[in-house]
Image (cartoon, rainbow, N blue to C red):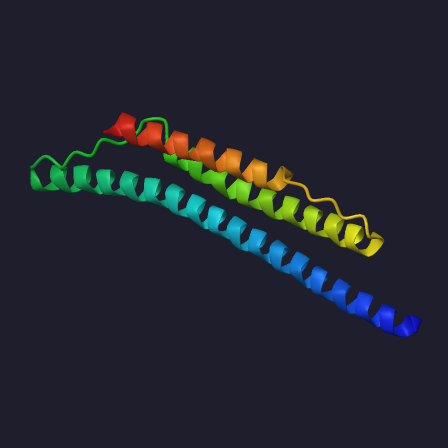
Length: 140
């Protein structure tokens, strides 16, 4: 009789472990998205700097003024892009730690949900959103 109950428990544990793994993979996909966005933000700032440089350079060669683009002086885009990439890396590490912790709790039967990673991600994304909004308003 015990083997039937044990088999059922193992099957349920497998399902819970697979759900834990799917959650971990979702966090990894999210962190990859955050890092990719950071890369795009940083590269776009580089593109704008190159565009202004070549416009001014070609303007001097042709004896005309190049077109003017209002670019930030302090390089906020580069800093923001690097911060996003770093946060994506940190999020991957935290997701892995959470995955291992939940896996151990599932095996021990002591699972307790935690919203720490969710709260961290939400706070950071809101902060980045406010910084981007301030940046866009300032450059407008």
